[in-house]
Image (cartoon, rainbow, N blue to C red; front, side, top):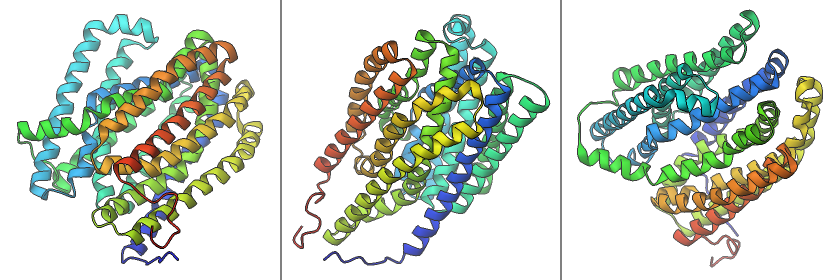
Amino acid sequence: MINFKLSKYATVFFKNIFIYFFSDVFNKALPFLLLPILTRYLSSEDYGIIANYSILLSLSIVFISMNTQGSVEVVFFHITKNKLKKYIGNIFLIISILSLVFLIFYLIFGSMFSKLTMISIEWLIASVFICLAQIINLINLILWRVEKNAKNYSLFEILQNIFNFSLTLLFIIALKMNWEGRLLAIAISNIFFGLISFYLIFKVREYLTFNYNKDTINDALSYGIPLVPHSLATWIKTGLDRLFITYLVGVGATGIYSVGYQLGMVIMIIATALYKAWLPELYGMLKDMTNDKKKQVIFITYAYFIGIIILTIFLYFILNLFIDLFIGKDFSESKIVILFILIAYAFDSMYFAVVPYLFYFKKTKVISSITITTSFIHAPVSYLLIMKYGIQGATYASAITFGLTFFMIFYSSNKIYPMPWFSFWKNNA
């Protein structure tokens, strides 16, 4: 019989789950509220351009950050605050230099790149400042998360999203702007809150000291660089399909696909909330793991898997009804995207439960190798399936490669840190 003992952190843990869950539901609900508006005031071509710009941002942030902000979440538990201040200062140095490199690149090669992406040079340059602000926001949020300060974390995200939402309504409805109104809202909200994050980190919370240290930079890069291929591969699996659709079918089809994709991702609301609350607890347990704790972790993980499967089935019917009732008629075809995107993100939600072991033991190269492998599979599979089945082919490719990634990560996590996944109910497990 498994002995479940409530730790002294149980109350805080479940309180944080509730706060993160409420925050994520609210923040994800805002884009849902925007969908009926955007799909009525914007054409599918406009929505496709917005989707393509979002893809550019997600790709650029990988190379501007080099994923160094993620190292803060790990070193926080191993170094003093004074050393952490210097560590974060050196991360700021890294992202500042890389932002400058991107600006120079766009100034020199902007016209050529603009022709390839259909995005103006002005918006390419703006993307650098947006990405820099997003990274600073991420560092601020990471610090709150590792401090288990779910209240401030959630409040900050909610305020930023309300600001973004309000600007979008102003620019698109009141000022009658097209896709540029949405991009302008994204730019202003991210940069404004990026400045607030910088002030909070530097002046209020005193987590920032500018003191160049080669070893610190090397440590941050040694954590982040192995994850760059992983992040790039993730982008291939979640963003490249839109470029394929734009090229093979048209930018209007990209807009339709993006609406369905956004709806299918709703399952991540639950997964992200649980991940944010569970990760610090799991890391704390891994420092002093016992057999009883292993059984408890496995039981919780399996219960989570079952919940995700049930939720996927439920959401399939709800989202189809949502499209019929609230989404503009030009986007009704997005219904064919829902099912397999839900399945893909069900696998991704379960991935969150097994990948922390590899992060904790700094096996980021394993994560990268798996993600790169599956992305190499995804790219040609996605292209071929889109050629044959249109936007629905992209959903098939996502379900296949997301599922493959989950099973490979599950296997690797257990190999690095063995757990009695298939015998936890036994007394001697």
